[in-house]
Image 1: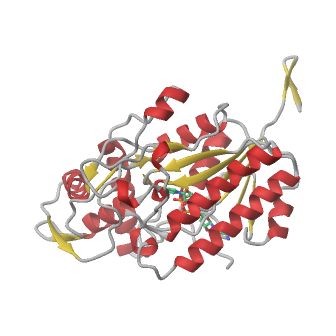
Image 2 (image 1 turned 90 degrees about the vertical axis):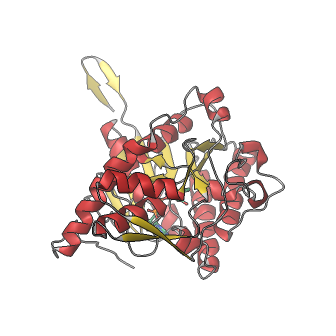
Length: 344
Ligand code: NAD
């Protein structure tokens, strides 16, 4: 506590789990800009920039003792982003199912318990649109992802089943232990400083990379027929929605996503247009997930008085510029970023 011109100013404390990842590292920056003292935790430091956290602890959240050790004080806000995740090439092949389920569920169980034992109330949990039933997402033009359409449950991936389990876990801690956990279902978040290569990247980053690497007059490959539809939310609006929900009196689950639905072909067309190159699209077999998915934003708009509103193209322009720089730096063999100081 400090005194500023006679006014008592109380320092606010936040804990960000998964702070070495895409959304977590952006959240740390935002919380620091608001004056929070922030502890970040992850298996690794952020890959593309120095962490902005006051304290960054490298460790494994599957270890319950480690979780208790990092929740060693009062935190006003805890953000639980840590999970074993990736794009379609990681989630839908089936090869990583046991890992994804076991790792992410263990992290959720440990962190819910550690926060409860320290009497921490406000814990945000990031679920995913992947928990919605596959049977409501077969028509690419008319998917149903309203929050109340979640049951009977039938996610199309084990990743989605685990998200459903974990969101129910945090809500059960609210009911039985008086916690105030908040749950959002994110829909495809993208932006600079996200994974863009290596197999865990998602569609916008993968397409930006392919376009940045292609020579004008050539082509890029797209998995499937490209008619599958999705919406994509730029990172800044994801962070804004997450903070608004966490600090509201509403528990969720709420969708946090864009409702500007586009086909993957349209997404590729936008990126090609931004690049200024002449490129064609070649469709090849690959994992694609459900045929259609879009964020349904009525509930969050009616309840929080806010919903994402920025156009997809605006975020794509920023993301393409960043990935193009990464691609160019990689080709020139110039280190594109802070070296990864991975521990395990
Ligand atoms: P990310 O992979 O960039 O970040 C997750 C971080 O968790 C990684 O840095 C990873 O090292 C860390 N982690 C994994 N296992 C850990 C462990 N055992 N101990 C400590 N740290 C561990 O992913 P992201 O895109 O930042 O996503 C954050 C959260 O949002 C995840 O829970 C994800 O499922 C959810 N989500 C993301 C999206 C999206 O489009 N990015 C969509 C829906 C839901």
